[in-house]
Length: 113
Image 1 (cartoon, rainbow, N blue to C red):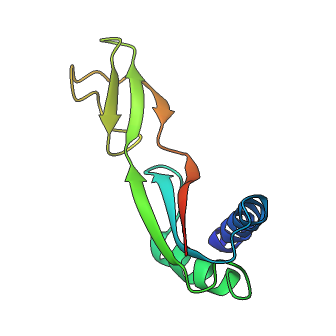
Image 2: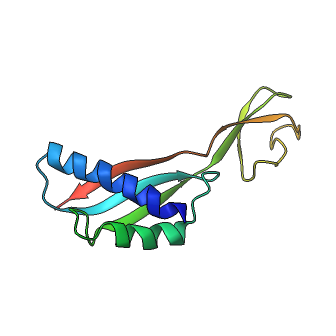
């Protein structure tokens, strides 16, 4: 389960930011996750609760924000949102799409007590 290692990386970032800003308790962590990132949300929530034990984010709420998939259509030269990597262009129906986003994952913000 790679969600566990993702949460370990998040813990490092969270603890570094807590130290840098002299924060003792994180109550909420918002994470943006692209549709194509390959992250299982339920597994991420489980891993988050386990990995954050003993940290400044122990007991914090994990909020996930879904980011759409994006691609550049070489037929109409527009950047479009797509639900699946193999979808045709929703604007022109073309099939020559180059993914441009939707595979990212980042901590958007932290709420502190």
